[in-house]
Amino acid sequence: MRFRSAPPRALALFAVLVTACGGRGAVAPSSTEDAAKDGALPEDAFEEEEEEDDAPAPPRPEPPFAGDARRSLRAAEPPPSTLGLGFAVSQRGADLPWLAILANPSESPVQIAGDMRLLRLEIRPPQDPDAAKTKKTDEVHVCELPAADRPTQVDRELLVELEPGMLLAQQFDPRLYCDSDWLVPGAVVTPKFGWPLKTRTVWRQGKRVEKPVTQTEPFLAKSADPAGDAPEPVKELTGEAFTLDASYAPPPAPPRDPDAPPPLELEVLSPGAITDPIQATLTIVIKNPAPQGRHLFFRRELVTYEVIGPQGSATCNVYPDDRAPERQAFDFIGAGGTMRVASRLPEMCPPGLFEAPGLYRIHARLDAQVSGEEHGIDAFVGVVTSRKPALLRVRGGKPRPMWLLPIAPAER
Image (cartoon, rainbow, N blue to C red; front, side, top):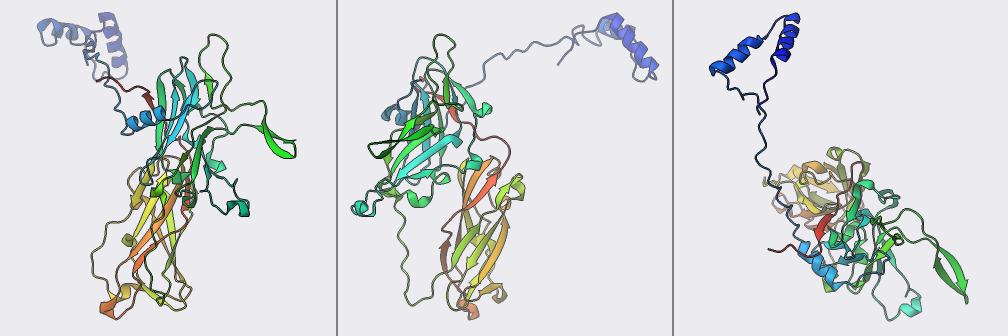
């Protein structure tokens, strides 16, 4: 970058100051001017250059799920809302993330909290013909983040002014909010977004009824149009319910020899809350429920971790070790005994996986493949999966914002 030449008086003052400080590097103003006149320096050598590239930055590419978000929004019935907002959750089978969509198809701008921590899923189990006998027809599971991870006020950094014709969308893994045992074929899911409505209980004709009362802060959405009478703010949006399909059926259990001892069991201990993801350490417990001791060839690369967090799901493992196992490499777990192994997650997981604050659910799978037959050992061989996930809470920072997209795709 070039700078405009300073006037002689300023150069003279600069030379006096430099001389007073010891004279190092001083340049006489006359020599600078003479150099410019003689051609050693061009007269515009210190003139600031104008920026030539005024072209606008290219638009941010849309996420791969943008088309699915628009189709899901068109297929869903808009929830009743004083602000005319749309809300939908779309499930695309058990193997793909779900989508949450907030949209403003109205003619007025709206301020809305685009905070995925406000998502809640109410799951009604499949209808059982004998449910009337057990009196569990009204059973509903509420899936939401723990109270420690849900905001009690609007997060200003996630507050979005949603213009007419725009939507917010984000992918998420429902297992971050729900117990996997509730996600089964035939279950009916009712999605909600925001803070639950405040109610009071009244009794009418001997029945308990929840009656809405005057709502107070925090609100999910408010009108951003200063003109005219503002509509009532929205506390919570309820989306259209949907039913889970057959893809959510659990895999069939592998055949097992009834005369063989029971397989090993695997548990992942919850590490609790951390502030520095680099220090995340996870401990697994391998238990032998059999009445006799078992050998096990164990290395860390035989364990695979599945992590479900605010940024989606990922797989963590160590590069396999192909060395032939020696006899002393086999561990012995006594009857009813356990073996504990601790590992540092950042060494096994993709970089940046735990950078987003929030809740992470972690499952583990052990693939025991070495029988020890060449050493005369009958070691356990099989696949063992943890039944319940470990919970890791990363504190600090801010959650990931939702994607801002036009409701109608851009013309090409």
